[in-house]
Length: 176
Image (tube, rainbow, N blue to C red; front, top):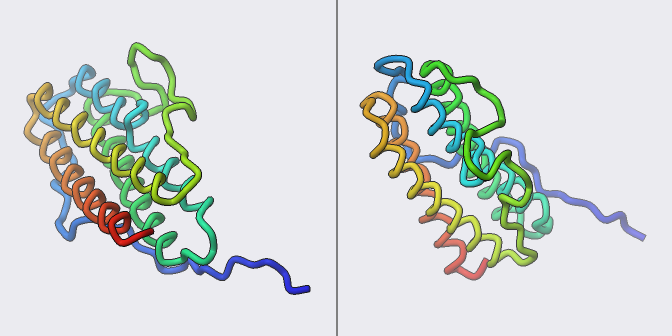
């Protein structure tokens, strides 16, 4: 009896993101209210933390026969990790405390923040919806933050999120 194996190599995967540099990570001044807003993007229910965990969970549950798809999902998750790191830098520069606690009415992050369907098309659709929600939230925060340095980084993150939607929609439309 042959062993069951996963032969999908994850070696050499790179973050899937727009081929544009990020603006310098800097802020005009310390502003803990802005840091609190970014903490929601960092680890709130709609956040980079949620995106990373949802992508990793979906990637882990896809079969070994879907190696190309798995590699794509992991590449998107890696881009979300870069977003998480950029937000942490901004939060610290703004005088905030980088942790996994967003000051929001519904409390701490939990796995209930994720959408984890069983079949691949529903996974992709949930990922698209999560990216769209993140973009809406980033735009709300951009309108509330009066720091052009911070907003430049948020706008650049939005470009990646829009690119992810395009890729996910293409995968969904092509029968994944």
